[in-house]
Length: 465
Image (cartoon, rainbow, N blue to C red):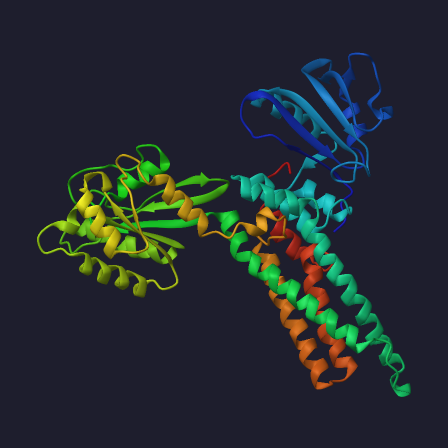
């Protein structure tokens, strides 16, 4: 992919604002802008030093379109590696479009989604995983996802992959060199060191693959389903967690007919809470649909908050033993889910009842969604479900599905090499598996790529980036 034309796009969000930034990149970016820019001090844009800013006007046919600041970044010392001009104009949508249309008529074309970052990749300003981190950084909506994206954009993940690839490539070269001297039966690659390298690469790949579980949580948030019978306080709990009246609360059973979702950030991690319809036998068609959706939401959730009305535990026909059976039933029904059992309405329970619960039930959380008592404890329990050690220790965390799949394929190829080396297969067959592992690692950083892959990646970027 080779680009020689000049592109333009709005780099700030569309709509009215105090200012807007219009970005232009390409070999002729500076000369095109200079034709319609007049500095207030009569400075020539073409001879300005890189990374300088000039105040002036954008003029078309002696008519001033706007007073602007023009920033000049000369290639290769720019974001894209090409000549880049950024025009900071007033934020009127009319002014924005007047300036953009002026340059579209005079040598520029509209940039495609992510094309500025694509050019940065093609011009060697960043590798592919760093380019993808740019999109992740823009999309980050909590501290954890921001921290991971920043680390990846600065090359932490790339450096780790590059180091593995270089070491493996050195051994691959020696093994392939042996093929040229096969008749002399010589070995250039130390097999002991080779086994040690393969074991180390295998361990690193497994660690990175395992990190995807926490990485996926950081990037997408944790879906948490709040379930239980009608009127146990599910909607009240959602409102307490969100600190707003998000769900309708009523004494009437079956008020929640559909799942209600909202997100909060707890100490840098995103949680997506889902208030579901109360589970019970019903002849109400609409409520029945809501209950069916409840089971669908539970299937998609990673964590289930099973809510119980504390008052109902001590009415006629109810016993704590029956609750134990219900809890086991939920655990068996969803064995792969993290389950937190919550006894609500703590504020309405007597000291005697609280003591009985404490004696007979373990691993349950007592709280009052109405008063907020115990809400912070619940938040801490949710955080405990996340392994944040890797984040605190600045370890590499994989958040990208494409990277995860490439790592899985690389690990599979490495394990083939290990097996072949143990079984004593010929060097030419082993070299094929090594090359396969190298290719999969190269796919992550973009050393091995194709136009279709790049198109898929950068089409998800916003225009202007």
